[in-house]
Amino acid sequence: MTNSVSSNRPEKYNIAAFFSGVGGIELGFEQTNEFRVVYANEFDKYARQTYQLNHPDTHLDGRDIHDVQPKDIPAERVDVIMGGFPCQAFSIAGYRKGFDDDRGDLFFELLRMIEGCKPRAIFIENVKNMVGHDHGNTFKVIREALTENNYFIKWKVLNGKDYGNIPQNRERIYIVGFDTKEAYDLFEFPEEIRLTTTLQDVINFGDQLDEIYYYREGKQNFYDQLKFEVTSQDTVYQWRRQYVRENKNGVVPTLTANMGTGGHNVPLILTDSGEIRKLTPKETFNVQGYPKSFKIPEGVSNGQLYKQAGNSVVVPVIKRIAENVSKALNESQGQSQLDRSGKFAIIYTKMNGQFEGQSYVKEFVDSYDQALEKIKAY
Image (cartoon, rainbow, N blue to C red):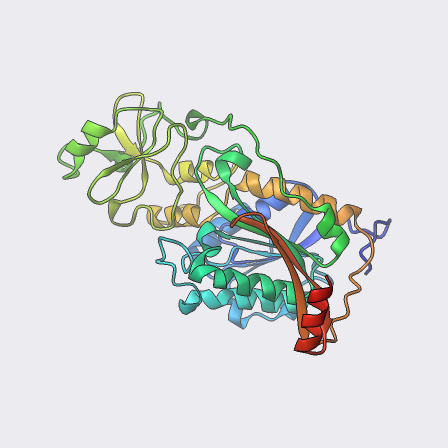
């Protein structure tokens, strides 16, 4: 199949998704009506329950990615490979262990799928801290691995409240790559937009909910401190083991996979009736921009549901990026003509500060000396 705009263009681009969680990245792409998921992979059995409830027709593979082969994907072609490989190894919450953590090698498993399927485009989401991990060396390895596999990549850190019109302070890095320079040149990340969605749009301040969500006198030994400090409905709070954290007015703090562990980190609000309660699992998915129709499975603990929401993505940000990915694919023609026969790659990289950039292989050469000569000539 050639990468040309013609009547042969498939009705929708085929997606193979890895580390799918509850399917947030796929959902954002599907909402454009330009993509369809032909394969998804998720190892966590509780996340799979939520995924299957909301995407009953998707081929969902529950195996460890180490056991999956590219040929296992049930499609003649894969146009896009995507994944938000587990971020805990690179996040502050995960103590930033990176490739030293057992989970750090999962990027290379995703790379194995990319090498095997050779999709037209790739999409990766991860925590902002991956960029600076190990003084930038971790991200350098990732981007060089992608470019040496013939992908022209762009990356940028985007905040959900600035790019998704969702009231959550959530910064994530997004990496988008294409197998042609033309599609790469056509793609741009979306522009910042004004936040108009309010806390009241995603959180139920009025109704009385299940008692398990409320903080009461005599129920928590830190209740008096909460009562003293949780005083505004324009602010979302958190109990952080020893103190109450007051977050930016009008936005929810970054949801984390460990919120709720030991009763900590779950966002707290002051209800219309003056009571203090934590967000429900459904509300945490609302805060990630999931549609109100998104279903929560029965029989799965709140702890697991909080984990799923905290591990997920801001869906409207994904959708806006996906719209630009489809535009680049639709308007690009031809295939990459890069000769990969040389042993050394000359990589072009341009950084716009620490959190935005682009990179690709300009050419491959046979020797280190030849590479130096080429670089001098640029």
